[in-house]
Image 1 (tube, rainbow, N blue to C red):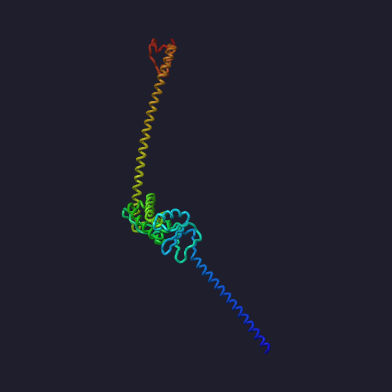
Image 2: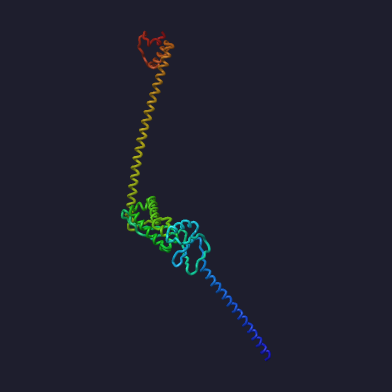
Length: 338
């Protein structure tokens, strides 16, 4: 009995001790919860005073829906500052540059974030009509960036709306430009299409610059004929190519005839000049020979007569020649050795 009583007392003492430990643990957890709650509240309060600007962001801070501050990167700072200062609507807007941690007034000031990197908008495929009444399925894309976040926010507001406006302007100008040319030019003439897209890009920038948007590039991703019109289009393209090939052949033959005639003309001129030069040289040679003959005759007339006679013999007499001549003839003077 005494042992049971002692055991009961030991159990109650242990229970009291455990209860004290639990109370201490609960108290500690309550204190920890209070500290954590205070830290969270402090973080929320500090967060309402601070914000960060990333490398790919540009910030617009509004106060009661009015723009009070703009934060941009260093590369864009000068251009955006000059543009906003010229606009009376943004005369009181503060412009900052940089990245990292910034401060704002809690609750009454809101942070609007916009990307500063290049954005790509892939337009929807739409039908356009060419000058020769052909239907073309056209698919484009445009690369653009937000060049002025303040203008962008008050003019458009978000990326989705910007893409929609870009789409409207692109197809408006594209339909106008494509309506001036035939289908073959659009599909095959790359130089013309490049110049046309430059015109479209310039038009887009003229329309969207005041909205804080700069169009960097516009390209046609795909041009395709509707299935129903493909056979007739291909036949027309084949006929046009054959006509071009025929023209090339005609031009080549014409050029060949021109080259041949020019070569013959030059050859005739060269032959005439050569003949003239040959006659001149021959005349000079004959004159020189006559001079030599005259000098030889004056030096020894008898020998010159003898030499000329021998030359005459060699030119008119051979083994089969029979000559009947008077022995007193001067021509026979050397034949009979007299």
